[in-house]
Image (cartoon, rainbow, N blue to C red; front, side, top):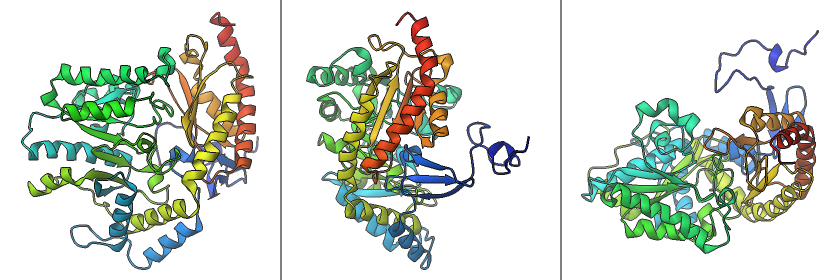
Length: 460
């Protein structure tokens, strides 16, 4: 059998390695919401990569800004020079943050942003004489990054268990998954119920030992675009304030305009003490992220001997020039508003798929951070059998149709299947039609095995 030379299994063995041995086609080019392999097949980027390419691929304004900066300088070490792009991006970033969030520390990605937030919080506690505070409470499931510090606050067993002996275990509370617990997410009592778990954990740990609580305002990969129940975010803010605990918002995935507001937490008007942002902030044009903090936190740290932390590429002028251009595109093209409008349409179309496909148990999210979850029984929300590997199979079926989607295990990484549908913020109604057409074809191909599993479980 003659195999075309550019197919994955016909190419020479790669010297690269990532998570698995799986190969993918070679990427030829990418424009806006589309990507092409070297064979000419077109894919609709229905997940913006890993929820990164917020303004689409190869935007000419960003490419022009990067070329212009490359003619000036591509690197200026922060201990030797200040650079115009980093200063301008810091000012622009601060202007987009809630009032009081004025100090910016640039990084190369989300894990670095979270790690920086943890270390700033600890150094702040030391600077104000609260040495006993070191515990960071997070949620289960959650994902906050792949460094050991970020993994210690991640609640996702397959990713954390192998490294547990190397980390300082941190306390966890349940994520507010009202849809699994049979609670009404629109009822303020539900939000109060889950927030009370945070206060109980702070008291159980000893308030004088708790440094911070970190939370994704709208869930990312681990919870699949989970929107908190009514009143939850405000209650969490009040609890942290009452106990002197810093509130860190992980906006790595939900920040940057994707949810229909620039920050996920803007939907509730809640102001944290520290913010971590990345992914859509640089939109894939250069490795870029930021930690943003209140000056009242940064000031004592700098006055007490300085921030004992740093990265070689922090504030890289080329990355910051790209970031500035990304933010200008978001504003000039009204992409935050478009994310809200097109996201509402896409969500309604995903909800309509629940009728022909009874194994879709939940659709959730805001703006263009959306997800649906597969179940064996909508009444009990029992997951499909883990051995089915639905979270892998449906992704592959969609990929064969020319649609890229993103999946994870829903229940602490062990079972359950959710799929993130998060096209770039440039998506149009026509793109929504195409996403639904291709996704429907993939679901139809997947349906026989899902329906068999439901029947075996006594559901049908």
